[in-house]
Structure formats: C-alpha cells, structure tokens
Amino acid sequence: MATPALVLASSSPRRRDLLARIGVEPARIASPDIDESPLKGELPRAYALRLAQAKAAAVARAPGEIVLAGDTTVAVGRRILPPADTVEIQRDLLNLISGRRHRCISAVCVIDAVGKARTRVVETVVIFKRLSDDEREAYIASGEGLGKAGGYAIQGRAEALIRQVAGSHSGVIGLPLFETRALLRAAGYPLG
Image 1: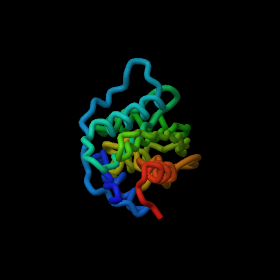
Image 2: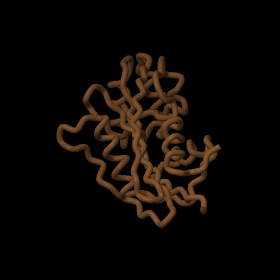
Image 3: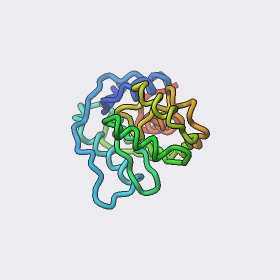
Image 4: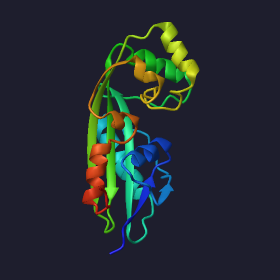
C-alpha cells in the first residue's frame, strides 16, 4: 500500500515549520478560501473547531491524500479577538491582554484517505505581564505581531513579555504538535 500524501490546508508558514519539527513535510500546500467571520453568539472554542473543519473540507482531496487543517483563535472570556491587521488594532489588543490571562484555542482537523474527519481542540492559557507604554510601543515597532491573532507572536520577542503559559506552546504558535501527531497517526500517516 502506498504511503498517503499529506495536504496542508493552510497559508500559514508557521504551520509548515511546526510540522517540520515532527518530521512531516506536506506533499502539497493548499490555501483554503473560507469566510472566517464568527457567527452571531458563537463561542471561541466552537468557532476555532468550525474553522478548522471548514478549512479541511474546502481543500480538494485526491485519492490517497490526507488533509490537515488548523485554526488558532485568541479569546478573552467569550470574546473572540481579531487578528492585528493594523497597528491601531494591535495596540488595542495588547492593551486588552496586558497583565491578564487570555486563551489560545487551537483546533486541528485531519481528513484521512477515505474521507473520515478527526478533530482535536486544545486550549492554552497565556498570561502577559502588565506592559508599560514603552514596552507595548517597542513591541509594536518591531512589526512582529502585526497580522497575528491577539497581536503577538509567542515564538518571537513577545515570549519575554509572557509570565506564564499553561498548555500547548506549539498550539499558541498555530498547531498543537502532540495532538496533531496523534491525529495523523490515526489517519494512517506514517510517523516514527
């Protein structure tokens, strides 16, 4: 039986880098085109799971291919935080999470070679230190958190501003590797 080919349904270079950490190289990458707007009243966990499933389903799967998709959502309470698409949004997000806990919810969906979908959702609690105005502005000036969920990248300079992480560090970056590896194995993808 031929080894199934893996399709990464993501436009995130971080997800590809994370997969490389566990020795996985996608055969191809396909960027899913879906509406990522939250539904009215949708809670963060349900939102992240729905997006991961929608991304996986949006990518055409050839015979023998396995599709992997993920979504990472940042939330404060029931509020889903937007990506920091502008400096103004990033500043608002950093002010909101400064000195308090928030959740990074990372959902993964794997569709195996026969079309069976498997999912996992991982919640990680992240606590930022209380940021001074100078710290916040220096971080914004670095350009690192622009476009990122929550307005920061934990794998970069922001890590020095985080007091505590309880959960999956790789999940905060964009793909919880422990759960992803288990899903890929269950789908028949060969891993050592």
